[in-house]
Image 1 (tube, rainbow, N blue to C red):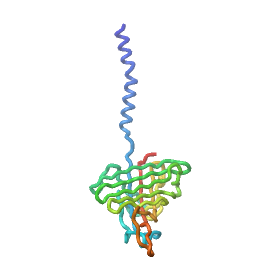
Image 2 (image 1 turned 90 degrees about the vertical axis):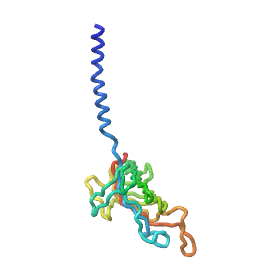
Image 3 (image 1 turned 180 degrees about the horizontal axis):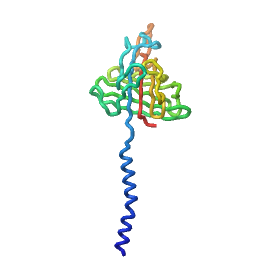
Image 4 (image 1 turned 120 degrees about the vertical axis):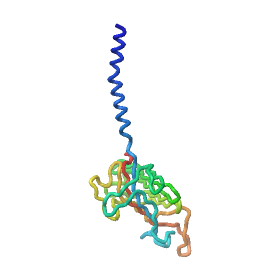
Length: 217
């Protein structure tokens, strides 16, 4: 009789054990999404900076991650940890609902001697990015060759290749954003130029088309 009770007790635990295993298997087969990004960034003279206060004579390619396409087709992205042109790409991003809009915190970095990064951040908790765009955005354009250009009053518009982004899911949603950042008066710390007999901080126009997907919410 005791043996029979032991057998029943042993068998009674199997359904719970199988259910737990099934749950664990389901969890392991659905890993967290890996963030991915495209960016085509430039820094140089612009309508606000002008050639007098920018230390670049022309517009300079800054960072290219992923593959651009013509028109309004979706560009190809690179996933975090992937390799492009022999250099590792890192992507970290969040696009989360806040107030009446979204908070964004976006970064894409490419390693290597000619690598660099672009970071795009909105004021946290303000919902500063909406379906109409974003203002008061901080843009940081860093280069291992040219230094770091920063502006805290950049704007975001939902354009790509100069045209309005048209996509079935929209350019902005939780975990995803596709648009353009404009920082026309980005400054590099500690560098000045002579203007009209005096000095002025170096100031250039930093621009980038970008697409971030699979971001945290």
